[in-house]
Length: 157
Image 1 (cartoon, rainbow, N blue to C red):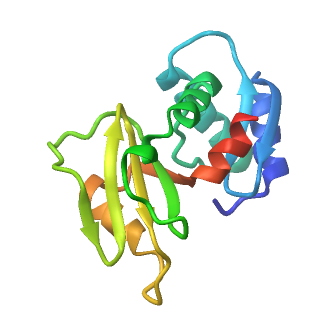
Image 2 (cartoon, rainbow, N blue to C red):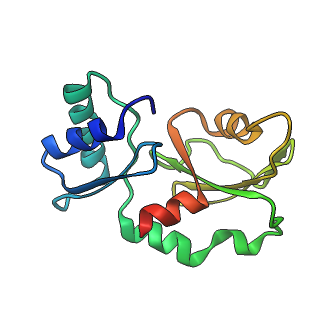
């Protein structure tokens, strides 16, 4: 993310978001806002970052109830995922514009399923590094953000 979480929190607070807190150091921000569309909140957050920090970062908003629902349904349950595998959720701005035939596998990384505008991937770490990222970008483009299953659980608390 390349910014300090305190600066990020201050930008959100200056924009009028309430109960703002950051989770970890990867740009996760939890906040309260008046009821409006996710797209409007994303635009407001990006404008606040640009104004306060001089740079805006790709922002994807999901209601906390939606994240809790993802955790409760555990989409990985339907697949044989090694206990050693890392579980990754990729959030897209919207549904992919192209039809994707799943699962897709490369170098131990598997894009397993898609629910709405979330993509569920599992991978085993290899000496090649985070091959899942290149697989995701090649398949879905760059307008996305990826978090581990454990990070989503921390954000949803």
